[in-house]
View 1 (tube, rainbow, N blue to C red):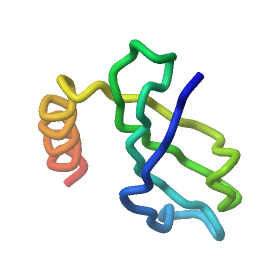
View 2: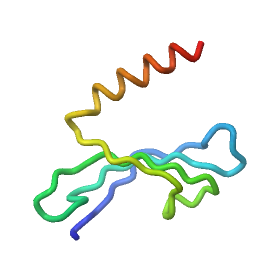
View 3: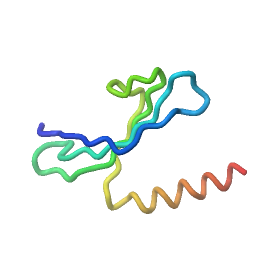
Length: 77
């Protein structure tokens, strides 16, 4: 694979002692002909090189995901 990543941001994961959330753009994550994705990773112990969870989001879905997250945030009160 020719995967290359660019870190966009990293933040503290609320409710944990050392946890972090990292956001990155990964180019060609699934091989030469694949489109770039945004990767959101959660590392409970703070080691973002070995996250506990991660999700890859295609560019075409980002606006819908942001909208859904805003609605979820509102429902939390």
